[in-house]
Structure formats: structure tokens, C-alpha cells
Image (tube, rainbow, N blue to C red):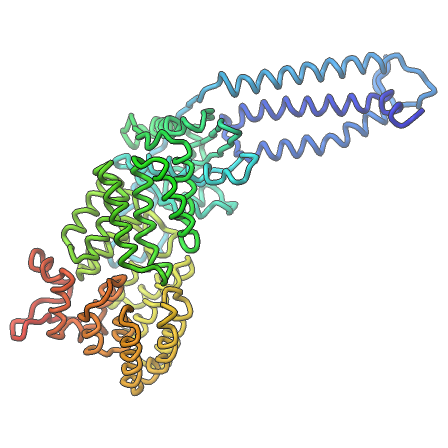
Length: 626
């Protein structure tokens, strides 16, 4: 007898087919129930792998054993006829048919009938975390998380096409944005919560590291125009699932889906929040524009080299739908930050493009939070200090959990010398986005101004480790100059900065490297100044003030600050408040610069910068105590 004939006689093929149809049925049941039982999306993959592995022993046993009236026994070969084999074959065929029909029925139920089910739990109230005081050690054990706090983790992409990862990220971020606008709910920033994408970290640890009491997790699977979202709300303190749901929609209905999930989550958190209804604005009716927006926003979040393709995608999105306010707002943010990442991007051109995109977003939605935040920074760049603070406060009134907007407010305050107020805002941003180095770094800048060098150094080292490398190294140089003065340590810190910071223009790189020895030997400072001024004559479009300021060349730095030139990144204005910069601030000509950039108008309306006041003698100048 041939091998195929023997396989047929022993019902091996039938057994294999029956096992596969049974596996299909089990997977369909799991796909239906697992989201409601709180199992992660990976559990379905594990089940599929396990069932496929089990196929091997199934076919082996079918080859070795046969069914007889007395039960199973070892097959004795083709020479011994067994009438039960035919009966077993019929039963296996019947089993296959039943499994196929049941699996098809469950699939139809899932795709066309089933709607989400909500099973809210009652969260246990825990103690509210106390704010960090100035003299409090932030390395001490963390206080219990605020029960009105939550983090949205990146959703897993379960789609057959890996390119749909943007949709999973976009769904999680849209949900985060909806939740962040609920009054009284603290929502961890995207940067920190999405950092757990590739980490196998327990929910309790995530809650502790982000300082939140609740976690939202989920998965997205897209096939054609259909999308299935599974999500769950977990209490981080005890890993208890408070709610889970599975949603099936068309891609065009994602806005209603976002509202459904957000509403279900707030229903589960009614006790600590007191919120009963949420609303989601339908941003666009153009599915392609929305897809381009999600792709572009995902790239924008990655910063760096991803900014250029992000700008192109957002430009295409607003071409498809010119009334898409959110797309205009993200495009404005991209245009504004581009010069900070690409030295070849003209700052003035970028600001004009950012202002145009932001104004179009605000013409469509007067309180579009991201567009207001970009407009605030543009106003600060123009020297309109009070207008900048008004705009950023309007943005935070709409989106109070936006750590980036808080950081921009802190920078606006830092530029005016309001150090204590800036530190408070930077600390709020850090609490919302604890795993992002930028907030720690700017917090350290205010600690450096106040002479808290050890604390500033610890935060700068942590910020550097979290990826904020170039700016952290720049502030580390400032720290060394304030604490130790010029010498080998300063030169080492300076060389590390110009190595870490990719924002130094290529035209200036040679000069930056050439003056490094002057940081180690102050007697070389005059020669270094002459070299910098020669480079400034060759490249007047560049801003040489930060380099002259760090070298302690006060007169030359002031001349460079006052010299008419294209707008810079305002970095000098953020770095003139440390003790080592006191000679610059107390110089009579500094008032001329302060008047140019709108500081005198702001100070006259409010109060003088921290640690400084107007001197009573003449000429008019600031008098500072550090």
C-alpha cells in the first residue's frame, strides 16, 4: 500500500484536518473572550503557536493508534481490517464540519453583531501624592499615586501589515488626548508612557515609574476598512482590571470609537473623578487626511531625522482637507522646532511657516491647544512676553496635561528671569513626563541659577541618560564654570558639549573646536575672543553670543547680543541668569539688550527678575545678588 493510502487508512489526514478546524474554533473563541477576561493580546498569539505545535503529536498518535470496539489500541498494519476505522473517519469529518460552522458563526457574531461590553469596577481611593517642595529630596520613596491619574500605553499592532503601527500609536495618542482634557485627571505624557513599548514591565512597576494609579492598555487590528480595538483599564496598585472592551468599527468611524472608549474609562473612574460625559470632536471627514495626520504625528513624536518626512505628511494632510485644524497645529509645531534639529533650516523662514500654520489652525478652532502653544513661543521670540504667557495659559486651560506646553511656559518664564516660577512649571512638566530628559534638564537649569549645584548635576546626568544629551552637556559646562571656574574640568566639559551637541552650525564648528583650550587656560581667552570675532565677521548670520558668554567675554558678548542679525534660538536669554553671568546682567548696556527683547516692558509691568533689582545709582542698570 502507498504512503498516501496508509495515511488515509489510518485517518491521519482526517485527524490533522479536524485538529486544525478545532484550533480555528478555539482561536475564534479566544479572540471573542480574551479582551473581556483581561488577557493581553499576546495570549492569542501564544494560543495559536501552542495549537500548531500540538498538531505534531496529534498526527503521530493518529498514525500509531486505531479505534476498536474495545477502545484505542496500537494499529496492527494494513493486513488486519478494522471496521471502526470507517466509523472513526465519519466522526472526524462530522467534527470538522461542526468546528468550521461554529468558527464561521463566531466570526460573523464578532464582525457584524457584537458591540462593546463594559464592566466597570470600583477603584479603591489611595492617598494623593504631595507636591515636591524646594528642599525635599526627590530621590526619596515616591508617595502613593493620585487616584485621579492615568497613563495610556502604546497599543499593540495586531494587523497583518506592520505598516499599520501608526494606527495603533495614533489610537492610543488620540485616547490620551481625550483623557488629558478631563478636568481633574492627571494623564502621563506620551513620551514617558510610550517608552514602555518594547519593555516587559509589570503594570505595578509602570504605575510606580510614571506616578499614576491607572493604566490603559490595548491592541489594534486592521483588515481593509475594518478595525478592531481591544482595550482595558487596570488599577496599577493591585493589577486589578476595572474595565475591558472590544470594539469593531470602520476606519472612518474612529472618532466615535475614541469617544466610546474614553466614556467607558471615565465610567469606571466615576468615583475619583466625578466625570460622567466626555466629548470627542470629529476632526476631519477625509479618511486619507486623517491617516496622513496620524502617520505624520507619529514621526513628529520621534523628532530628529523623522521631522522632515513628518512635515511632508502633514502638508499633504492639509492639502487634502484645508479645514483640518489639528493637522495645521501639528504642522506649526514641526515648523517651529525644525531649526533646533537642523542647522541648515533658516530660523526666520521656519518661524514664518509656523506662524502661518498656527494662524490657520486658530482660525478654524480659536482654542486649538497646540496652535496656541506654538503661538506663545512665537510671541516670546518677538519679545512679546506678556502675550506669550497669556497664550500659553489659554493652551493649558484647554489641555492642562500637556508637558511640552508646560515646558514652553517654563522657558518663557526663564527668559524673563522668573526663576522660582519657571522651576515650579518645569517640575509640573517633569511629573507628567517623568521619563523624558528635557524636563529634568530645564529643572536643573533653575537649580543651577540658585546655586544648588549638586542637585542640578544629578538632574543633568539623569537628563543626559534619558536622551537629552547636547543641551544637558551645555548646562553641565555652565555648572562647571559656576562651581569650579575655568580650568581642565571646564575644558573637558566644553569638549564634551561640542561633541554631544549636533546643533552647532557646520560653518562655526572649526571655530568652536579651536577655542577649546581657552576654557582650560584663561590666559588664552583674549586670543579666543579675537578668533570668534573674526568668524563672526565671516558669518554674521550666526549667533556667537553663547560662545562669548561662556568664555566670560562680557563686552564682546553684549556687542554680539545687541548686533542686528537674523533671529536666533533665544538660547542665550535662557542661560544668562547663573551666578557666573552676573557681570553681563549688571553691565549698563545689558538694559539696552533687555529693552530690545521686551524684558524691560515685562519687568515694568510685573517685577524685576529673581535675585536682581534696579540699581539706585546711575547709569541705569540691574543690581544682582548672585
